[in-house]
Image 1 (cartoon, rainbow, N blue to C red):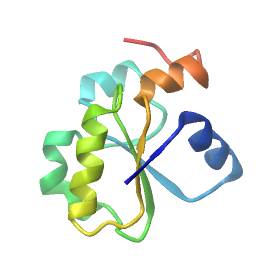
Image 2 (image 1 turned 120 degrees about the horizontal axis):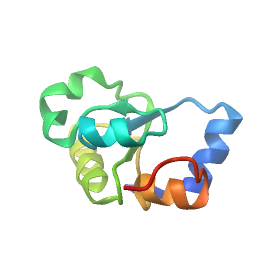
Image 3 (image 1 turned 120 degrees about the vertical axis):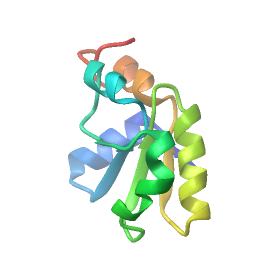
Image 4 (image 1 turned 45 degrees about the horizontal axis):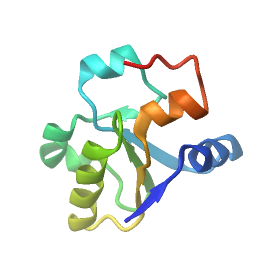
Length: 104
């Protein structure tokens, strides 16, 4: 599984690449700050994995990168081929891409 930097994700989203951004944080974290990803908390992922398209490119993120690394590993073991972990998570996004995203 390859990490993706926040700069790379921003560039690819701006370009209109078809990337599914998966947010594996908790709902209260998502309400505090989000970058428009699809929320499936890490603990819910095993029972909701059927909601995801294994043919899509998926970038998983959390706050700092720990939970999303676990989620990305789980997805790969479940047969997803094109999965990336967002290095540094939403904290890196707030720091280096969009300072309007609240840090928490």
